[in-house]
Image 1 (cartoon, rainbow, N blue to C red):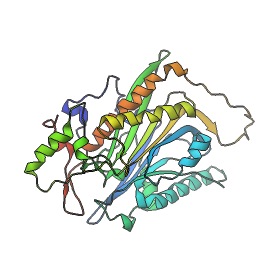
Image 2: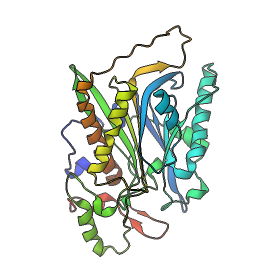
Image 3: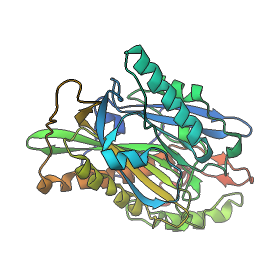
Image 4: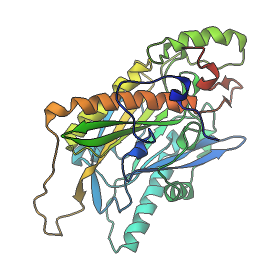
Length: 355
């Protein structure tokens, strides 16, 4: 059964039109795969964003990253910041599984490169994380290398949202968080381009939640009086990973500017970026690929980039898509019971009454 998304409740975020799926996979070539681990002690998993069908390592993507608040344990950001390229799929998981997932990305890349006769002596796997210890035995480190490979193998344009993959055990605004996505289409020079966002949501205090300008968190807390088992987040902490993909021809510097605007979308849901929350943004464009080395004889690389005067359209798209992706992550997630016995309700259970 297809899950309802935030637009199914009559909530339209922003003014720009979404892509056909209203997901990050509206960007041609991008796929998303999950492996979900759900049992008596675990609610966790891994989500992998595959940027395209060919070998990422041999034909890198122009990329950028931004750490808005650094309470996080992500891997691979330093090299993206320095070189402006992405050379592996991007994986998301929980905090203590970063190393194991990193190892899975390494093995995937080595295996693919060996099959193509490409030697690997250095590699920069990119792994993001959120802490799901409220719902899962995080120290047991349930995600394995095999899970990472399975998530990549199962990646598709159509993918599930909510409490799946890396979002299985996350909490957002005291409600159940998860994986959410959205996209926007912009037009420049008579040509259409897509900006897609995927989030792993695990942040925010309940009272601060805003939906389309409405103080939904305050109204949810009023409704809580009849639900004594309901969990509540009283502080803005926990983290959000934001992945942005686009086919817009931009430089890594321009992409850096664009991904920072996803923070506007986060703020529009009510968050103020608390001390204990890690807000990390990673972005890539499928335009302006960068070959692994100069062995092909192409000593000078030519890139096409938009004029800076046109970048506001991309800023708006990033803000709107990230806002909607967060709400989709919450409304698509089902109710879950925490390790303390408290119930993390789905946002869907309060809609449309809380608007």
